[in-house]
Image (tube, rainbow, N blue to C red; front, side, top):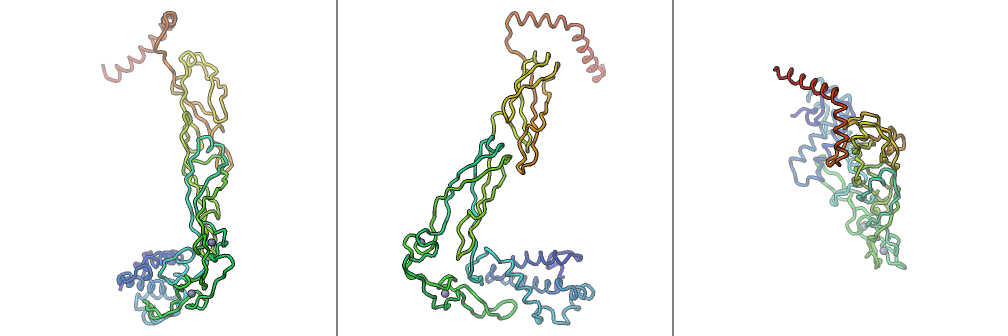
Length: 373
Ligand SMILES: [Zn+2]
Ligand SMILES: [Zn+2]
């Protein structure tokens, strides 16, 4: 017989929560309803339940830890002791609660939440930075307007289902790894509603639903980026049997900007400056998210120097703070010179001669040292 901890895939010092969580995962995986006619899964499911029965009970767990299987088998173990049966079953129904529906299974009739929908929304760079209001059109199911979701032709009414007498459920005996038990299943005649529609609504053919293109206004907050998701409650598909509608999830994609590159909430770009501006220093026009501003670069600015404008980046999507703006200067070396410019530069070089040569010399000396000549 395998070790119970091993069966549940937990360590010997696992907490009750860890044991429970692992049990749920495994029970879901090997549940007979999901693995019809699979003997191996059935065996595993049995093992998992047996292991959980012991390890979830502090007293039994202690005995098992001390005496091994002998410590718990003597007093009945899982197969004879149905004390824990309800617990285990509650857990399984818990796992399958909500929107789970497997068609063949023992789901009781009842409201089912509508499906969630996804919509991909493309935004311009600036729309994402500053936020925007958009109207989108989503194709989805809504309650039929003619019959208000009932599926019944106006003026007509529903009649009680004869198969289930209006309960929506049928009961029958079922074999399971636990032994025989009564199983409650959705009535196939009425689909669990307990009622049969005699005269169906002609607009929706009795489904109670209509596929519609619905226009929805959404407010995109400032600071969203590609990968941001906006959820809009209740704008998914309509629910079944009076269940709530699903949600609509808007997935944001942001188009690139010609100049600005965004990293998180910071903005980066490179701007060309003339070599005279770089040498003399100058007031230059700098694009920011809010428009063009004047910025003074100092005398002797080297190519590749990066400047930072604090709080000139993208607003944080949570509404607190802003990123920074970084711009790098790239010195443009002129490719064509007029005769006059050429003369002036020669003049400049002559004027610069002494120190120019010296710095060059220093560089070449260093190079010689490095290569050992
Ligand atoms: Zn209708
Ligand atoms: Zn029925």
